[in-house]
Image (cartoon, rainbow, N blue to C red):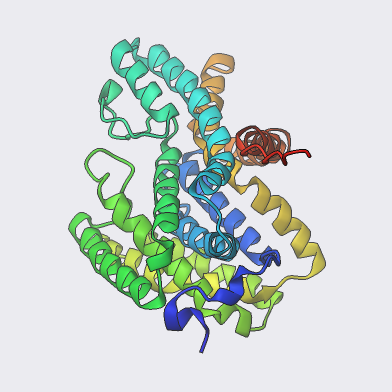
Length: 379
């Protein structure tokens, strides 16, 4: 039996050996980011939304991947005595720079859009919302009566929950043995089923009316990811990379399920995908050994995935404003050409942002906030 399933994280994990890098999980994260993008910009390709109608569920995949990877990378470090300060610095250095940058870009883009369309500024609420969002806090001021609690970049709502559950993981780490995690996953899973059935969807946590349900959503998927890592199942399985790549086809089909199912079955579809298909995909990809060429693609796509996820909304607002100015046409009238232009531009911008901004910013924050080394007294 794996040591995690007896009394929690085992003492032998205190070793300084670096955590294994899961190449195929980079690929899965990148694919999930692309699906979210296509879900949001479907109007650039088609008249009505038919691209990945369940694409919003990929946020749950992000949470699940996060739980797996955080446990893989930090169980050893926390066991060896890593402080909350250093853990928080690591997570903020990873999450905050691009969060702040895209919030500012979104602030400029959304205000320009509102001013051009409606002549609205809504000053006090806008500034209060910006200040709250810049410190990764949801806003309920509702400028322009929007429903989103992160209106300048709608995707950032999930980063708030990501950071919140990361800190909870650290604070509760000593108590998170296998039994407690199972109970936590079971309890949050039952609550999540209730939320899905009540709202008819799992697209929850992003708005004023459903914000509280985001805590349930992140708790279930994140700690299920932790549980999957600590089970050791990915280490025991040996999967050829080809099978993992082929598994993307049924995943794509599942994420289009809402397009063919009756609306009354939408909530059931969401539950099946998050509770069964996503965990299976996580295990499969964590166990997969990709061929060298696929590893290169996975590295690039996975590295750029955070930027793909956070840049898409502010960039599509800016992109959508160009055709009316330059051509006197709405961007949707240029579909699908507009989509085939926007997605490659987003991928290129995301890759450059990752290499030229994210990585340097992360390293700078870690160096700037790292505690100064103790000075040895001289004789």
